[in-house]
Length: 499
Image (cartoon, rainbow, N blue to C red):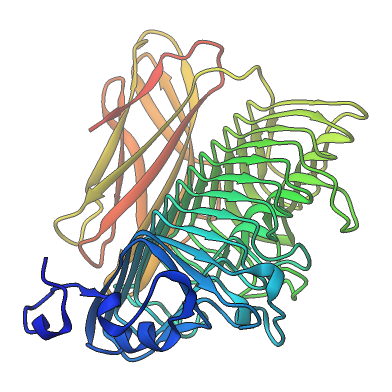
């Protein structure tokens, strides 16, 4: 392969860092060589052969696209560098894969803000991909920090982040929230998946002012908090495994800020997560497996099909408009569920055990139906509407019994990026009843998100068949749809089928 600088006229050819004088011997200071290589072209693909590359801080703020690819290569922050390891700013895209970043934690003293000591940090980079890396021994700040130019401004439709299959260990220190997270992300439309995060961080994964993002299939061990965020909107936290966290498993509150916008999280799904053994933190207060706390604010969360073991409380709710379905809260030290909202918190089909006292559910509105867990179906689909219509049809709801009266509950959660309005989310909960094959549907929740520009309809299509329709009356959109069917019967004749 041609990698010499002299062959740079070959468009897209990678540049070998050795050609700029870098030496991967674990001794040579490679800072100047690496930074010169990153600054050598507007679109730079930088390749690191196997070796240990000492440096005192790597940064690139002038390139349009930056790609760093390693093959058994380690970027090692030299003693007393007292800075972040890798910093990329103002690019259209950044990719890092196959690298090990070692922050040499024991030999750094970071002063100033928490961002001064990150492992890999991007700022105002529209499209970020960080895959198949190891980030370890970061002194202060997030191991991976993805920041937008201004999180309070409307996002662009092109900004994305993919952070997957990374290993993060022994990074940061445990202290106040949002200081030394494993993965910290402010970008919208992020997918953070399949990462393994070990010890030494505040949050395993923290989202801040992020819209339309997914945090799924991550494994977190012994952090202060497993997953969560402030100001998240229309996000999904699903199928993660959280073990032995010290303070919280999944945590959503305002991080000691006022319970006002933009701090409040809304329209978010917490589903299919397994949380084991919360406790042991020096921080005051009870230890919670799942907590959503926003002082009687309407948040429109769906908390479904999670399994928690231990903690002082399995679930603690201090907000309104939440649906809690199909969860199992086991062996909580005080209560399995504690809920003290003012409106419309619905509990369906949950199982709760604890060692001390019964569940405490004190809600003015909503309903509690606690049955043995049975026949909860959930499906995810993506549909695209071809015009400004509500015609995207992801699923049918069918019944195999058209002779007697049947009933179930359907939760439908839809998200999209509208070409004018940006990220949107709508949540609806329907009662679906079939009487001799005639299906009627009733919207059970008064609040339904961005219904003016993103709509959901559930209605009979044919005898014994109802349909779910999604879309926008103002534009053609691609909609992600999350659906749950919750049976009120031990054996249900209802089932979901892709349209």
